[in-house]
Image 1 (cartoon, rainbow, N blue to C red):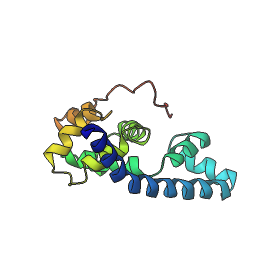
Image 2 (image 1 turned 180 degrees about the vertical axis):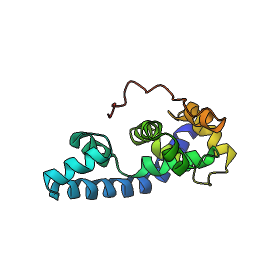
Image 3 (image 1 turned 120 degrees about the vertical axis):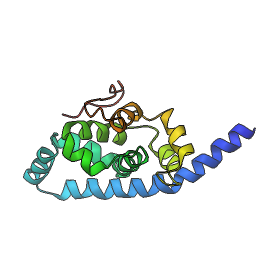
Length: 155
């Protein structure tokens, strides 16, 4: 009974974030629908993906990208420096965060700020980028965690 109550409380905490993310995703998809096809193709190409992949990313909402930056900070990494150091690795990390099924749980774990060791420790159990962030924090910039099979590969 207590476990069910705790689970319900967690879901209720995630609900406002989920709702804001859904609204942002709907706005992004609407903007893509209203944009000329050539502009969508050019934008997708700028990100190194197809127009279909761009729409799939937009449908997931902005939460994943924001969490990637917060998790990088929690590991003592600067997301901007990562982007400049290795764009392909940064893109892989972003895709894993975008398509992560635990992104709202991650948001709650990082809610106390990037310096909260308890939130970071909890995130290690489910974060698909945990090994990559740990490797980067230790100075191995070429490290990359394996891509989980359920996540789409965006090229």
